[in-house]
Image (cartoon, rainbow, N blue to C red; front, side):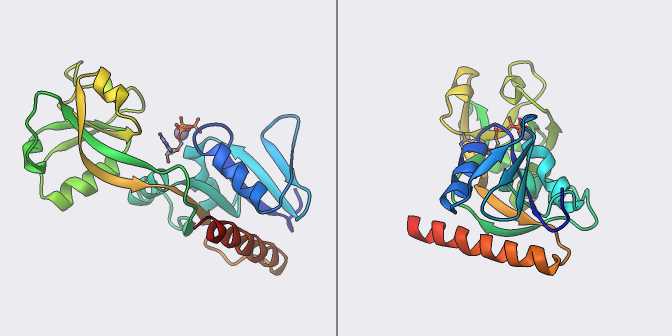
Length: 221
Ligand code: ATP
Ligand code: ZN
């Protein structure tokens, strides 16, 4: 990869990838994908695309492996709160797609009348830092326990009393005897960038891309 080309990290496949590809397409960019499908090249501008798991995107951008990236605010903020990087990536703008909510969900039989109900309880989540930040804001002492997947089964397995998970329809929660009771974090896709100054060549490309993205977003309003 040439040093002069702007490197963008986007999700390889998943709930962010269609929106990310569509946005770049709406900016007038044609992406040719490499045979290994981990790498793409933009025809109209000196831009390279790296296709990654969404969880890896904040670190790739922070560590300068990529200049910019598209990721969910939920994943980005969780990483920021964990202070994994001395010089973390920076949020540039909200992109208006992949909207979702991190929600606290409790057993259906609970009559939930506020966060204080969680005092002394265990909450299973893939987002312990965001969950702890919310608990702190609510002034509640509860334990957030990390689960990478199948968070919603934790109460049935008696691993936790409640969960904090990304909710779209609520069907998965319902099937596990849970109901959403409070929004912990509202998220959407965001553009992030490495915090170092770009080279003059990259800066020109970055600014031109930002202008195009802003144009696309404003035309949607
Ligand atoms: P990967 O294989 O890249 O690690 P993943 O399974 O962790 O993918 P996805 O389910 O594709 O992640 O979700 C990626 C991001 O999309 C989430 O972090 C969140 O920001 C957003 N998202 C999650 N669920 C929804 C939803 N139901 N609707 C819209 N956006 C969502
Ligand atoms: Zn992921």
